[in-house]
Image 1 (tube, rainbow over the protein chains, first blue to last red):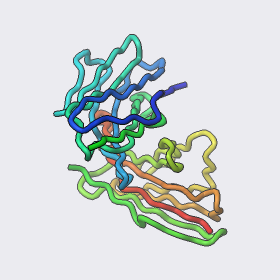
Image 2 (image 1 turned 45 degrees about the vertical axis):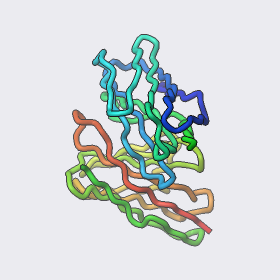
Image 3 (image 1 turned 180 degrees about the horizontal axis):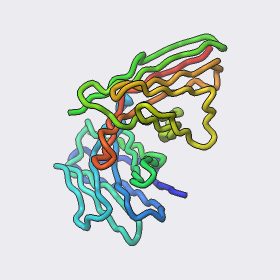
Image 4 (image 1 turned 180 degrees about the vertical axis):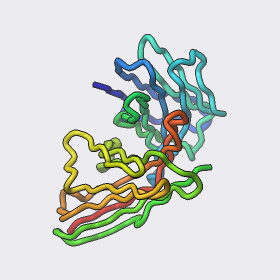
Length: 114
Length: 116
């Protein structure tokens, strides 16, 4: 069975500071991809960052970067220079290629304070 | 970027009626579309996967006779909630996938269903 665990239900960070959201996963599959999605109050899901499991190099997208530790099955998201617009629910997800399915974690609610 | 629309964005219906939700990929052809259900302050639960021209694959515990999914074309999938009951009230989200190789999914804005 595939599981995605986000152990931080809610986090807060001051504007302009850095915050790290945790995610661990478990799968016996070898062909998978990892994602972080943002869901703001509008509830539109937005892709934040994507990591191919076969790549050792951590993905980065502007202020967003991941720390992918494959052996530990850990995939954390670092947000630098936090902005008020980063306030949202953040979901970690795994895509299993052989099953063509996505599985989501329970989410972390991030509050960026002015 | 790839855009996915959902219609309606919000629907209120009486118990026992059926409701149809449309999911369209506006600027690309989607080989696969996914339907999710999201309870308040909860994660997304995959309900089913649909491929154009074939029957949808439902997740365990999802009633296929209650949640009818039709994927009529590469740009349109519909979810029909049949004989809706208050417990079916939820936020339903669809997503569309370009190809399995480029496996990013693009999400619709969601549909809020309230069954009275």
